[in-house]
Image (cartoon, rainbow, N blue to C red):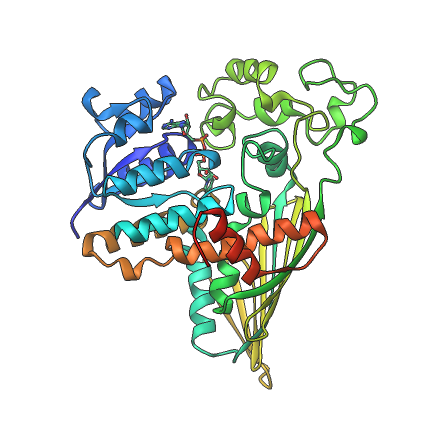
Length: 429
Ligand SMILES: NC(=O)c1ccc[n+]([C@@H]2O[C@H](COP(=O)([O-])OP(=O)(O)OC[C@H]3O[C@@H](n4cnc5c(N)ncnc54)[C@H](O)[C@@H]3O)[C@@H](O)[C@H]2O)c1
């Protein structure tokens, strides 16, 4: 397979470690030939990691994308609110685009990006890495094989560990609607994408409930100051103490996420200084967060299949579970444990499938997506892009509809949601 060249927009956590990491580990598949990143330290580090000279290194995506295309692919790994402008500019320049999820925090913008890719005749791959994790690939293959008959109902749960919720959705980058998409997209658009893929029919309507129940000032322990570093009286017994969580681990551990979000310098002194000033040292009960810490969805699909989905933000462990019930059997599994079980009605036997993997690459999802995408680009097969913009748009619109339902208390019809999103993008019908 020919090596695929790409430019990188945003050399943060995903850009540097996931995309940059794949290029370094698989130089026969992916080569980064230019990058844009405003942070001086990140820009210099990632440029050095990929041997890029100053003429290939830019401070801003606009400088990079103002030039004629430097490669066939642009990888866009900027934050949630900065996807649309670089995606549209890259498509206009003729790049195929690998765009991180969510496409955009507003439904109309998602439609604009997808339509632009189709008008430009370029591939648009969305970062739905779980579709490429062997565990979920197997779920899809088993369902497609008809082994459990016609799918009647799916139950999926995402238990987000409490430290992950506080890191990203209470203190961190995704903590409110001005910084990021609603959590049903920012975190669980992967799960909605999988649900739609497994059911294989468009969603017809959705109802959703959920709220921010715990991480509010009303729940703050008596006397807790604004920062964990300011002498909190309950610091010792608090499960959310930033000092223990962020400064406790040694430097080797602190070179990985989530510590890299706090400080690119892994030393304990640097991490402590970051807590004294930055968002990750804030008391979890005194942040400017508005993200629900629990949310449920009930979905009906065209053809009658139903699904339930629960996001629980105060789990003790990270766990995604799935149960699919069909007319002839049932499939059950736990993603992080890598275990799937299939039973057929009327048979005592249970078939078991195991997929071991590492949490650091989404249990094979990250390299799986990149191996697949570089392969379809190298072979020029846009029809084989599994999580294309058009496909992903459906699950994004389901997420926006769920958020509208959560906020309004109404059931949202997907036909109306699709119409409204097209209208918001300035398109008719
Ligand atoms: N697919 C997945 O499973 C997955 C997992 C985590 C995050 N994400 C998504 O990936 C995206 C990036 O997340 P992250 O954690 O890497 O964020 P990050 O903040 O670590 O990285 C974003 C980078 O973009 C840079 N940037 C800002 N303005 C820029 C500009 N004008 N031009 C070029 N670069 C610019 C920032 O300086 C930063 O380094 C987000 O949308 C996030 O939701 C996806």
